Image 1 (tube, helix red, strand yellow):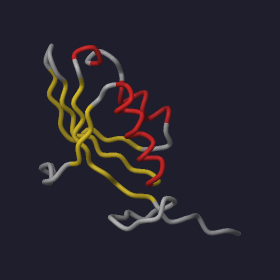
Image 2 (cartoon, rainbow, N blue to C red; image 1 turned 60 degrees about the vertical axis):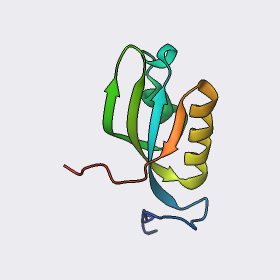
Image 3 (cartoon, one colour; image 1 turned 90 degrees about the horizontal axis):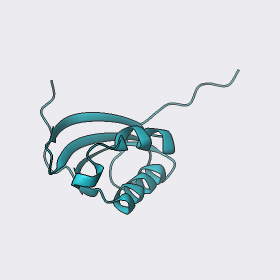
Length: 98
């Protein structure tokens, strides 16, 4: 009987098939604030999303999003976000764990 594959979290220097966790800041323009972008992201790409922090006004939406999945899939997801108008930046400090 085959053993289930183990999920490993990876960092820099990973191969595209390894599972990794990435935290990003997403900045939404006003036209996308009411669009379910994170829901669409989870359905378009084989990744797990986790909102770590968020602030939304009429003028901007800022979300700290954790994505877990294969590195190549996360890269494709980031390209898609940028293509639809979401600004994406890496998280440089840890968001408070609670």
